[in-house]
Length: 385
Image (cartoon, rainbow, N blue to C red; front, side):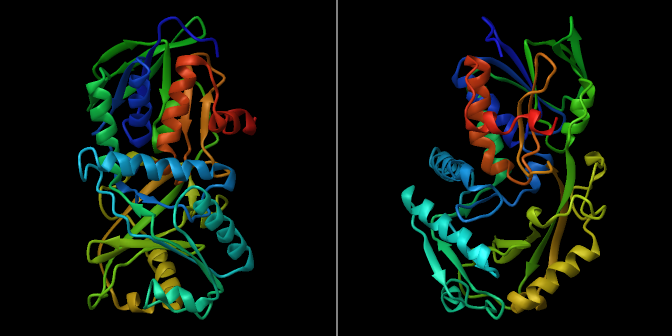
């Protein structure tokens, strides 16, 4: 991309990724405006588990630096001011049921230690119960544990990014829906919104589950699907009596939610060819609460009966569903769209909170200087063309 003498950037979407981009652009003194049709950090960001895990299989190992970056970024953000993003250092316990899983977490432990974090490889099922006493280990081969992982409030992260961006001069317009992408001479030139027309040198699609719709406004069909993040908050019959870590199984995960337990099916277990798992749906039709389907709850309770039977007697006290924007290879689509002036920050595939710091840094640097970092070099739209 040829750098411009003056850059005015419009960002469509005020979720965690859009707000990260806005903040990092403001630190490079690029003029930016964020358009959010609802409130900052609403949509899928608000329905995220917010888990920040070194030990996880949702990103290939070549992106391990993104896990390190997010932990350090949000840890620092939570200290300025104290508790700003609700970061809880809960630790993560990964349970492996295959030899392939064991080999993967062994590498993750080594990389975590090399990055200065604590991590322990657990060779055999016996050591797992040290970190989760109620665990049924009959099907477990071993796993790994780190005390340095945790989770944060995803909406609070987006709000904090937006606040810092606003302090640096970014214009953030909430309750403002983008209705049209404008073009002039074959170049995207701005947006039409419910608050009028705005002219820009560049427009960034950071629409989360609305990314397909935003792309279509520019005449672009993106290779994106939705998968369902169906969340159930379980209240144990009796207090567990110990600190519940982030628990990672191949097909589902859990974490503490106060005195309750947050459980959700892993996006890595979703089948894009199964219409119950994946499709292109209307995110505006999702209710703020509820909307979950019985078969997802049945799946989770089947998994719990084999691994954490104490929770099969729990009651469901809350539930909701969000749509993840995903690609076939479960990596984001970043950078050039093929339409001059229209950039992409789409399809984080369940890793939006983890990737937001890196996407914000790299895309803003690209806009300011034309330099492509590792994410932009490897996650371009061209790999699907």
